[in-house]
Length: 142
Image (cartoon, rainbow, N blue to C red; front, side, top):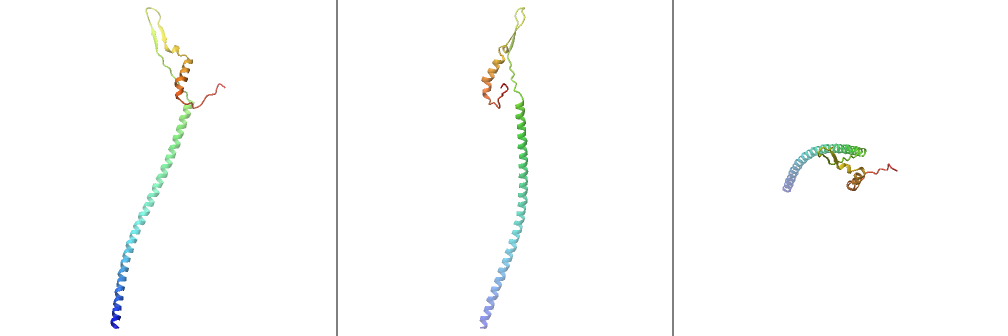
C-alpha cells in the first residue's frame, strides 16, 4: 500500500510538472501573441492615419477638380457669349489688273466689279452656310 501511495504521488508529481511545463509554454505563447497584437495594433493605427491622409488628399483633389470644372464652364460660357455678340466678317479678295497701252489712260479691270452683294449672299447661302448648323435665327424683319 505504501508503494502504491508513493507511485501515486510520483504520477501526481509528474502530472503536476507536465502541467507546469504546459503552463510555461502557454505563458510564452501568450507573450508572443501579445507582442504580435501590439505590433499589429501599431500597424493598424499607422494604416488608419495613412488612410485618413489619403482620404483628405482625395477630397482636396475632388474640390480642386470641381473648381477647375466650374472655371472651365465659365470660360466656355464667356467664349460662347463673345462669339454670339461678335460678328463674322467675310473678306473677299479678288484680283485686279491695270491695262496700259500706247498713250491712252490706264484701264482698271477688277473681278470684284462682277461680285455684287446679291451674288456674294447667294454664294454664302449655297456653298458656305450648308456646312454649318445655325445657333439661332434672326427675326428682325417681322
